[in-house]
Structure formats: C-alpha cells, structure tokens
Image (cartoon, rainbow over all chains, first blue to last red; front, side, top):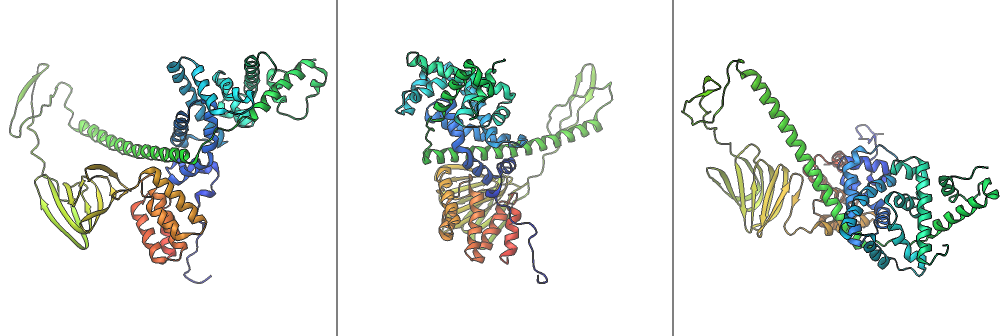
Length: 194
Length: 321
C-alpha cells in the first residue's frame, strides 16, 4: 500500500444488500430507500394477504396495503426482530379487522362483499369460485389463521407469533376454519363433500 | 386410545407422513382427509392480481405519506423540544421572581408608561409597566453568487428582493421576513435559509436548507421544507417514483447516462434524496469525476442528515474533490 493512500475500512453499505430485518431497522431511521425496498419486497405478499382477508374491491385493497406499509414504517422502531413478512401480515390483519367492522356497519352483511369477490375470482372450478366468499364469511380469527397457513403458506410457528397466540390455538383455529369452509362449500353444492 | 385434538388434526393435514394413530382410527383419518381436501383447495386459489400501474400508484402514495409523517414527526419533535425549553425557562423565572406567599400578584398587560394598582383577594399589588417594544429584527443575510442581478428594497416589516438572474443565498433565520420576486413567481422566506436560482428571469430552483419557504408560481402555492429542491413544473410523486425505478434499472444494467437522466427527472420529495445520491453514483461509475463531485457535493449540501451523507463525503474524496 502506498503512503498517504486512503483506505476504506468498511465497504459502502448498500441498502439492497440488507436483510429484511436490517431494512426495517433502516426504515426506523426514515431511510426512504429502505422503505422503498421493503415495499418492493413485500408488496405482492401483503396485497395477496389483504385481498384474501378483506375480500374487498381493488380500491379498498390498495388502501389497506397502503395503510399497512405506512403503519409498518411508523412502527418500525418498535420491531423487535423476527419474521418481517409475518410482522407485516400482523399489521395488515389488524387493519382488515377494523375495515371489516366498518364494512359490516356500512353494508349490513358480508353478502355484499361476497358479490364483489365472486366478480374477481372467476376460475372454472365452482368450488374455487365460491372460495373467496366462503373465506370472507368466516369469523376474523378463523379467517386470518386459514389465510396465513393455507393460502400464504406460513409456518405454524411464524403465524402464531404474527397473531400473538400459542401455536396450539392457531392450529385449532385452522381446523375450525377448514371445517367451516367445507361446510359452506358443501352447503352451497347441496351437501356434497368437497 | 385417545383421538387427535382439533389442533393435532389440522397439523396432521400438513404432514405427508401419517400419524400412527390414523391407521387405527377411522374418525380421525376421515377428519384429517377432510382437512387435507380443504387445504388443497385453498392452495389452488388464484392470487389476486396487482398490475404494475396499481403497484406504482400504491408505492407513490405510501412513500409520500410516510415522508409526510416523518416530516411532521420532526416538526413535532422540534416543537416539543422548544416547548420543553420554554417551560423550563418559565419555571426558572417563576422560581426567581415568585413573590412571598402572603402576596398575590396579578399580571395585566399595560401600555408602556402606564402604572396601575389592582386589588386582588384583598392584597394591593403595584404592577410593573410592560416592557418597551422590542427592537426590529435584524436584516437577513443575502449573498449573491457570480453575476446575479437583483434589486434590494427594505420595508418596515420585510425585505423585498427582485432577482432577475443568477444565484441568491438568503439566510433569514432570526431575521426579518424576505420576499424574493421574479417573473411569474414569488418566494417568501421566514426564519429559513435557502438558495434561489433564476435563469433568464425565470425561476429555476429553490433549495431550502433550513426552515421552510413558500413558493408561489403561476398562482400555485407550495411549501418547500428543508432538504427539498423545488423546481417548476416538477413531476408528481407517482411519475417521480416511476422515473426513479427507470433510473435504478438502468443503473443496474450499466446504462449510466440514461440512469442519470432518469434520476434527474425524479425530483419529487418522495424520491429526491435517493435519486440525487444514485445519480451521483452513476456519474462516478461513468467516470465523469467532475460531474460526480458536483453531484455528491450537492447531495451533502442538500441532505446533510441523510444516512448516505457519510458515503457521499467518502465518494467526494474518492473522486478527488
């Protein structure tokens, strides 16, 4: 090394190299690039989760996704490590719960929501076509457990942490949600098993 | 033999290998099969689509809202600190001048030479006259760069600067309000520091370093906060975010000039800080040391509190600034 040469002791930290947890930490310091990257990494998952949970129209889903990320950026300072996607799902689930309450008050029933979701689904399988409405009709606690495990493919341990419940409670909810779905789909078809 | 609990049945549906109990228990086997059937159906559910345009619109809104929240939080923190300092000062003053317990003083705002006596709860207290009027605030520090052409007019309550061309740096912190006028635009500066660039009589940029300024151009008022560069006809947050993404992709692909051009177009506050930094990085990678130095220096000046400010300073050394 030549005399007087400047050496860089630590390589430039690149935000795109950060782990999810590192990104959340950077978000807590109002780093806009970190926010943008966290958004990029998880927007599809959060959108999918919110759409399945809320069974709402596209505009409402977009609003919920926005609120989830804005809430996450605000709460980034309180993040204590763990599964970032699950953490985002937890924020989204709480927002969806509030959204559902408002929707129920406004529309008086999930029937209206079901009408919206069947417009969106449109798969050829009749069970699949009815699935969003059947999920939307589940109680919130059962719905969020089912969406996390069966639709989003989260691990039981992570989903339990996301919801703040013991793992056994989570699986019990998943069981009852599946039972309710089976009954709903069976009823809609005239009692046949799925 | 004890049957599986609901939770165990749900968990068993996740596993490929069957629980030994299922071999002997018809009820549990049936329940687990039902669980698996519903799970398989749910797994086949199509993902709701999120087209690119909607995703970009959400991104712009999210980043814009989070930026506004950060700015508000900073303002509240400053206000809180100021409030705490004032409260502490008031407490100290109260401790020093607080009268003996038997006396009660009522404070009434009076004219400069008036002296008034009031009876409060049977105690007579002579009131002090109000303080003399405060001296007018000092004039703002105005520095013109190069061949700036301007006219300065000092009024009783403010200063008016008419800028025809060139660069003007105004520091109006703890000073009288300054109004900078040019063709089609007015900039009001109160307790702030900024730089205004006018080219050909038309406002080109307003860079606010401290406080905030009001820019009125073509009848539209915009409040420009510290750390932001205002440019006329700036594109909105959605377009800015799109341009930023274009620049980012180009930078990754090694298309450095298009990357710089795209970052330069991304001037909305939502992405301005990042776009400015990455434009400088692109200039450095392109081997244009002068441009890189100018851009990194501009970044450090505009965004001194940025988490990348240190990297930018290192880069300045690297490019030989």
